[in-house]
Image (cartoon, rainbow, N blue to C red; front, side, top):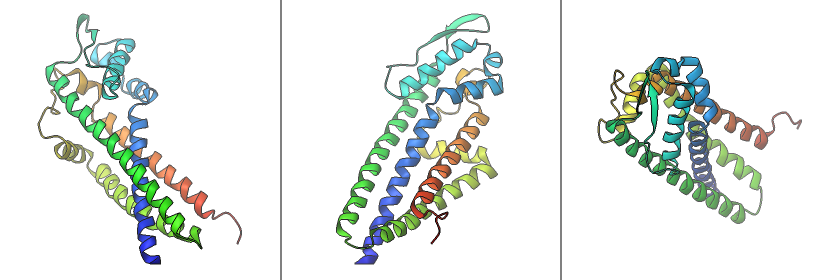
Length: 225
């Protein structure tokens, strides 16, 4: 019975860990400050031929659309001296897929958070003695599985980010709308490969930091026996 409880605790922490990772992804992807930093570092506005204000206006349109705060990504801006609609038909169609993916990820985040919390609470209620030991064991095994998965993904991304990014799109999209022409697409020039590389690294670092904080709070290695 104790082994079953430990397994359930491990599953609970694994689900909670997945929920926390998806929350971090959400926060990192929608933090406007990160976009401003990346645009400044890559000189994106000048490279595209837009003003900084129009670039952020276009970015906000994309982010608001993904979060269902607007119905489209139609935005006009001056590009290389000409007023035009920033995003073309192919980019607009791709963002429909991206929005579906994002909304699906939020649904999974909510389900895993609720399921993990309920499982953990149930085990704490059913466990009359040595609850901390069960929680620690569950954390070690559940988070251990998460860390293994994250480490595998991180190593793959660091070794060959291009292959990682292509496989990501082929896994989650059933069409080739994500293949945008850098000579004509403003969107791909707003978000080149290095942008997403920095974003993935940011997500991994925040995820590692969060799990480290939880581990320190749970095990408190600094406290004398």
